[in-house]
Amino acid sequence: EVRSIHWAVNETPAEVTNLPTTLLWGDEAIEEVLCGLRFRVRPNAFLQTNTAMAERLYALAGEFGALTGGETVYDLYCGIGTIGLTLASRALTVWGVEVLEESVACALENADLNGISNAAFFAGETADALAELRERAGDPELIVVDPPRAGLSNKAVRRLGRLEAPRIVYVSCNPTTLAGNVKELAASWGYELERVRPVDMFPHTPHVESVALLTRT
Image 1 (cartoon, rainbow, N blue to C red):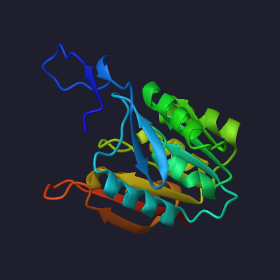
Image 2 (cartoon, helix red, strand yellow):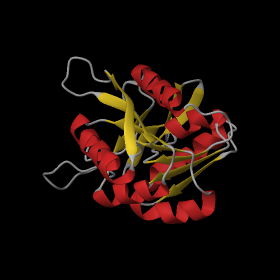
Image 3 (cartoon, rainbow, N blue to C red):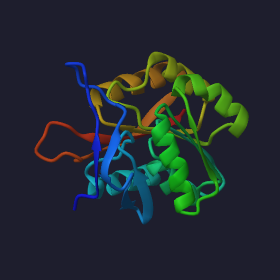
């Protein structure tokens, strides 16, 4: 079912994301239900295209996170809040950071849409926002990261390591950058890779999502 039509113009030969859009017809945003929660999505916000497998992906993140209700959770590269909001009922607080302001606006709207009051979301570059986030939220017991295909930058890995969170759940769309980031977190920051599980998000293609659990030794 077509719910809306948005128009965007790319004036360069390269692939470009986050272009300004014009609503030509229909609803400003569409809505999806994942893990029993409602999520509103706008054109420049990110949502996994295979929503059935996304539910399995988020369930794995929750399983690996092993929350008991009293934890502070950082949700880094949080997008529209899908992972953080699915974890919120099992955490004390969830704090999300995302570079795209439209995604942050969706995350805040989605928290309100689902009556979730223990989650907050902020716009900013993850590596640069961690110091301020720590001042606001305190030390995290769990950090969830879901970076783009390029993985975590060297600066992000360093600042993540300095937080010394007991557990990191790493959701990855690129096994190569996942391996490099895990190697650095293990070698320099005392983390151990406990579990990793692939999720066949894109059947019949070479692409795979993975969920990894790292704990401090």
